Image (cartoon, rainbow, N blue to C red):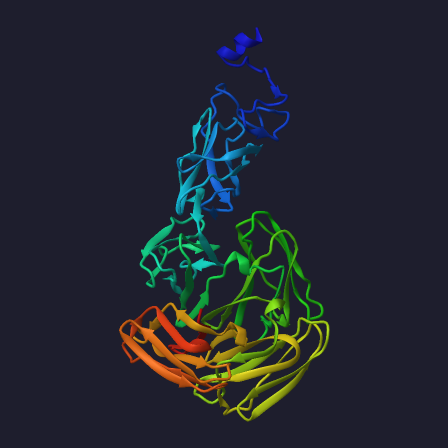
Length: 522
């Protein structure tokens, strides 16, 4: 009687609960669903079940060899999937966790994005930008992309192919269609997303080794940062300073990106400031988030600690008046007893602050001397503490040398007119004989000065060439000295290639309208 009623349509007032004990699982697949009713999931052909949907995949990238465990989120997975495909190739080890989540191991593929589709007895999920998984031989990340918020007028991802063969490059942002380019060996280009795009992380994938930078124009300010690879993620990393108290500092966010395959639990704390509660968050695999501290907070250092899960990439994105700056966190492994900065300027018009911040991640007190030419300032930095020094107004030149009794991290925080920029000091070990910048611009509106600074940390003279297209600039840099070169007004393009007979440190210092930015070469 009940069977006849079910075929004809349920009897009025009759409530039927169907419980599945040990749900059917296709051969080679597993299920963690356990007993549940049709109220929780849809099975079989009656009642009619909608086709599944895929709303996200995490992580959304993996090696071309396959083997990445991917969590797929969506709907309609309870009607046991017959296939989960990456493009046209089935994945393996499908595990249904719930009606809205499953895991699958990626098969081998070729470089580039594919749609991850789920097929059940009810049909196959429709493709969308949310189901993309990108196969890659090389990948790196930026925290955030913004061509939607007020003031963000340009956000371009520049890429240089540093390999000896053509590279296929794919850049993705959650919720947006992947953009791609094919680059000849040694060539550069830039990619961008449509107006209105916002989110993160930004993932650069390629079948060859590339370097990439993000060049952002915010109101009449300019900022550039290099892409970081998953291998640069850290369990513990630092920033020198946090400021939501001084005039003009209206936003200061610490972004966290998890390039791993499981969730990371992360605590961000202002260890040198009493009364400020640390912030602890979970960062999903392949995802990003950000935290900040209350208005009125100022001080440092900021310490980022992964309590459990994979290492993370952290960056600090600061809005100062109508300008924007971003800097990556540094791990204690980059601390050193001697570090270098290219240039110091408290003399040129517009440079109102130029502070050298000193962060001691060690267990012993640091005795530090900061030297520029014949001028020097000294500081004592307690274990785990931070301070800053500066030279008198009117000081200009370089290089700046930071010498410490224990290994420390140093950065230079510059206020130029109503803009702000921070750049980490570097060690002699980071010097290169060949390095690059993605772009040079003394042609576009607002770019009033762009200088390529060259610092020789070695003991022999450096003979340097700086090449952009068919134009070559030459310089000789004495041991321990610094100089800079520039291309003529009207010059625009990339890459800029810096070549030296001995390892050197190079930096590009840009004045855009009334703002300033510095980036080291890569």
